[in-house]
Image (tube, rainbow, N blue to C red; front, top):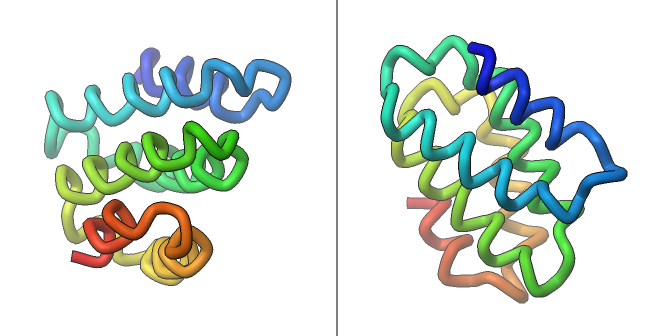
Length: 106
């Protein structure tokens, strides 16, 4: 819980956006390791990860979207309340990150 909250704080702070991708990577790794034990934090983490992709610099956007794909594959069905936001992100990312956008749809 402490690590998820600390990483969430980093993702919320626009003044340290240079560290957002690293925080998103760490957050995804926590979910990959903890699996079902991390599910209570999906509602906190996923909107922040989506925001990370939207605010990422062009050269980091693909990697940030890749983190969401890994997150969604790990978490599975609990992302259903966020399907609209995820599909909107696919639409926004289609031109520049087709490979990961397709992975997100899968």
